[in-house]
Amino acid sequence: MQYEVVIGLEIHAQLLTDTKMFCGCSTKFGSEPNTQTCPVCIGMPGVLPVMNKKAIEYVIKTGLAVNCEISSSNRFARKNYFYPDLPKGYQISQYELPICEHGYVEIVDDDKPKKIRLTRIHLEEDAGKNIHEETGNRSFVDLNRTGIPLMEIVTEPDIRSSKEAVGFMKKLRGILRYLGVCDGNMEQGSLRCDANISIRPLDEKEFGVKTELKNMNSFKFIEKALDYEIKRQQKILNDKRKIVQETRLWNSGKGITESMRSKEEAHDYRYFPEPDLVPVEIDISWIKDLKNTIVELPDVKRKRFVNQYNLPEHDAELLTSELLMAEWFEQTVKLGGEPKIVSNWMMGDFTKLLNEENKSIEESLIKPKHLVGMLQLIKKNTISGKIAKTVFEEMYKTGKEADTIVEEKGLVQISDEAGIEAIVNKVLEKNPEEIERFKAGEQKLIGFFVGQVMKETKGKANPRIVNELLKKKLS
Ligand SMILES: [Zn+2]
Image 1: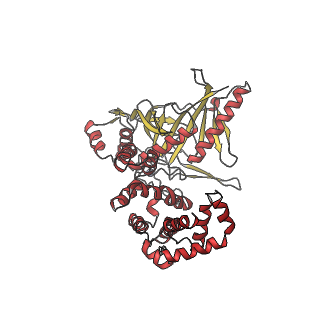
Image 2: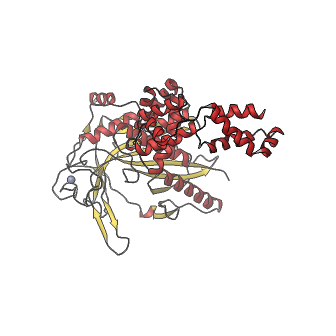
Image 3: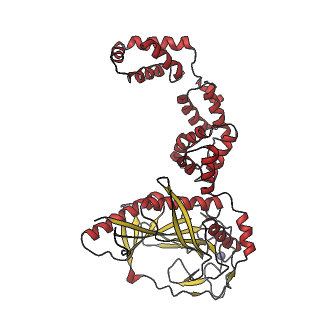
């Protein structure tokens, strides 16, 4: 049986405000537990919440960036439930009147754009964090996170594969980071994703029974958890059993999803309008002002990169995924770098080195002027493309200029023809058998000879001259 996968996502993004949603406590990550709390955020009786304007501003900006309608009138609601990390016994959220509705995010899959519709974006406060001792029976509650403004973004069930889900998350993360409203750090939990997932036979109109997946805190885990869940549901339907509507947790250690609670155990949150806060009226002029502060967003930038720099879609998509990366690229081109060549170095060696150390581009010692300096050395034939890889890595490690490294390490390319010819002759003398085979028609052996000459010169021979000399001597 062929099935269609139906996925909708619920994303929680911690907003990058300095203070919490309803009090003046700091939102700084990583402080000693319970040092950033006050009577308001720990839910003492008799306190009154005061709205953080910046948080509302960030949600409006996000809504505008993802094509939403901004509701001129909206309000907060109480979501009632008890948990040790929520001392008030309720969370202030939004229910029937969210700030943003009906938007979309465009993703590019196999070079085809696809719109993923957004149902709503609303604002709420975060809960605290329970920390369970790994050995022993004790648990602790850290309320530093309690009351940090959280934006919840809900999609329509438009996503059809784990790959699309990851594509959507990456695109959304990029937009939030461009706007400066969320740092997008999934490991620290400032961007979290839950998924509703079901499958249905290809010709079926009705949705199948869905499960909710939680606890996916990296792109890799989102893909793995969804793929696991799709296979699990397929097997149940193929076995003619019934899928149970439930919440499941991704266990990254075991690589499986596990049942957390069934529908019967689900909360009834008894939402009602928050009596301590007035409804929020959003002025059209405020929306207009905020619109003017929005930077060029990834999609627009991507299209511009394709037109202005004549880059393939794939390059433009990667280079514009992070604002700092896009800026790094444009600075390098401005300093004289050839766009496609700069793009190749950035997507290849540079990204590889950054990934190895899990570093971001601004933490790197290598700056646009370094790459431009190195590209000039290649152009002048001072170094070969192969040596350039060594130079690049050294620039990355030390932050030194390319010509300094080339001088210090004696990496200057050998372009003296007589010198190279002597080495070519030596290589040919040593390999009479290969010459026979080459002459008998094994043309690909030219690579072997080039390789031998390069080995003799530690990669420093000018490859163009080596090739020319070899061709001359072997013909
Ligand atoms: Zn507080």
